[in-house]
Image (cartoon, rainbow, N blue to C red):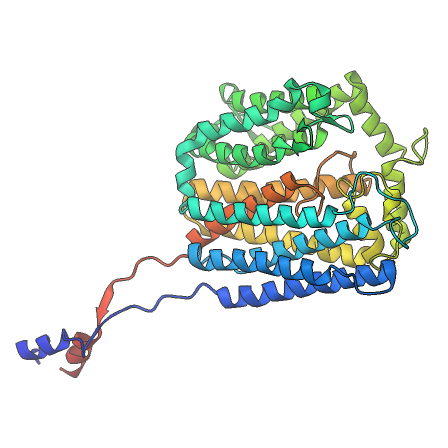
Length: 478
């Protein structure tokens, strides 16, 4: 049956309506509910720490909980506006860790003050928790700024070499400064001028991840070419070894001149993982691992500060190390047992620098193995969601960037947790979201913003054609 012209005209009238195809929603409602749960966890932990320390609810509970709640609500509203299809779990998971970090710093700052027994941690002021809340505000502001400025991940690809150069400069600055302006506990990893201090390596790893992603997208076809086949493994061509050798040399220079073992291992491991993802060549992994082991052994023999780390790792309770960080951290976690002593009821203040490098041992002592494993599971979920976004997105640059940032987060956590549990030699590196300090916290929020931007790009539905409902009805009637 044919359709009359007047019927066709009626179909185009407002009564028929031109309606767009329904689009899937971004699940921002569940995200908001989970953020409320994250704030509740922070409030309960803060109150529990106050009861453990003083036997009553701390006076600043409302200030910290409301302040933290307002900050995460601002982050949620920004995501709802700027990245509506982003993964709904990343922001709540990061908020839980950030909130627990503030609670632990509050608990540590109160050690030895007022009616609390124990040692005063001289490196923590009486307002350290408030300072950490301010750093949280700066971190969430950076999170919102990244979402606002980076509307598509591939925009960053245009600045591949510019960002890579800035990242290398940030890594090199501490080595060029005198010890009085760069060294903390033997590691030249800071820029210090008066009361101002920043750890440039935390931001350099993000810039270098962007650089590695852009470089490998352009060069992956060349780097994927096979050379000789030995023992069933296709080795790369000798002429293609240059990038790996350059990155390996830079990581060794960092180790020698800055005594920063953690950042050196993170830098080289990040490049190696992204190279493997880009080329799918197992030979690159084998070559990288062999280079890393060779460089580690050479620096251990030639440089005393590296060899000392290995000595403490192998013999934490001997050779005068029985009162060192590693030994005391291990004793604290053993004392916590399976369920911990309870927040505010242990003695984590006995471990030097427990608020930064060894904050994992504080959680292990007061929350026990159960609580510590729950926190590690939260980290694992963030990494899993980041890798899921990497797999789902189609853009090769965004895929490599999300995979690299996710691996960097996992590797950083492995380095610090492995070090304090004597699995690997101890390195001075922070725990994302938990350790005291602004550089690590701000950089961690930037990483979450980039991962959520990639996730939003991957989950965003393709533009749909407009359907004429009236015309459809007329045709169906005919």
